[in-house]
Length: 241
Image (cartoon, rainbow, N blue to C red; front, side):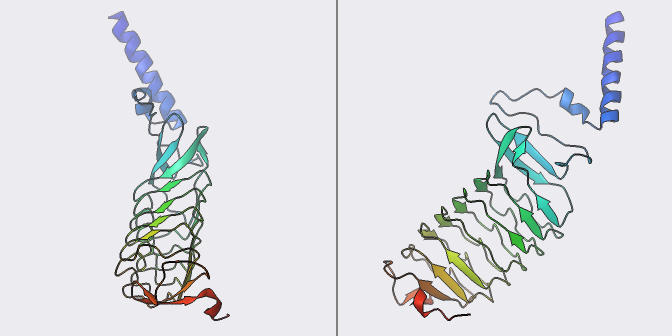
């Protein structure tokens, strides 16, 4: 009986403490995962990380959900001292208020549909360590006017920039060797696509519903008069603005 009383006293003290500190009581009851994953944190509103849910592993942090309503979002470079390396699948899906995003250079992977249907998104810098622009990452980001694809990117997946209606120009880095179908489909204001390297493997409908001119660098190989249905010219022929 005394043990039961002691247990209840300790338990309710913990609950009261959590309430005062705005900590989820479940944190006291969930043990670490055997594979090295720590507790998925649900921080208090006063915490600068309050807009996120995440997973912590031994050497990396993985942002799994965005639960805020800000127009400007700054993703931290570390969570509890662990570097943030990944933005999960659909983390910012249909965040209608989101207009500007700052991602840390520690991020090396952005999940598919991460910014899908962020209709107000105007500005984002893709970290230089990212290698792949995944499926539907920026699908229907109607107000995205320009974006810099990092030099290390080698693949752009299907629908990655589809229906980005405000996109005017884009530069494809030298290492890109794969662009999938509909990657830039229905980008109705896309006028110029500059390729810095050789022609990627050609597939159909990359620019379906879009009418850009492709400009290639002198000395690059694999190019024909058209690529995926669009005319190809030398960069030197690109009109001066």
